[in-house]
Image (tube, rainbow, N blue to C red; front, top):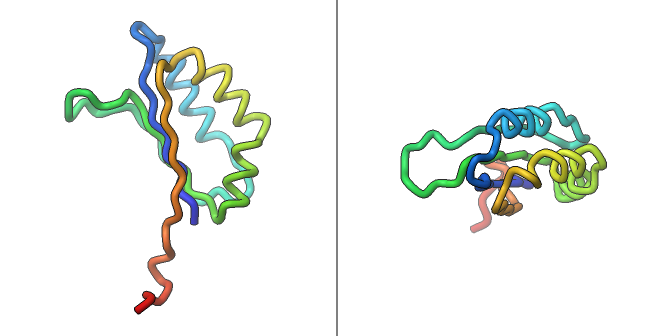
Length: 104
């Protein structure tokens, strides 16, 4: 499984209602191979945190790549997240299947 993690910092004075709409738009996407999606804004538990985050789990790297190239996904990124955010960081990593036998 591939986990895609994205975090963002908003521009000062950014409209949080647009952020809410952007996060809902990510949740509404239904690309093939998507296993789970979680989005949210920072809970304010520690100073200096980024403003929002999302995680999406994909069946494999090909499913992630298809999502990354998806026209609607890229529209949401460009039109909603792009103008709101001063910084966006991303990482994708493999999450091993916990049911798989351990390599010894």
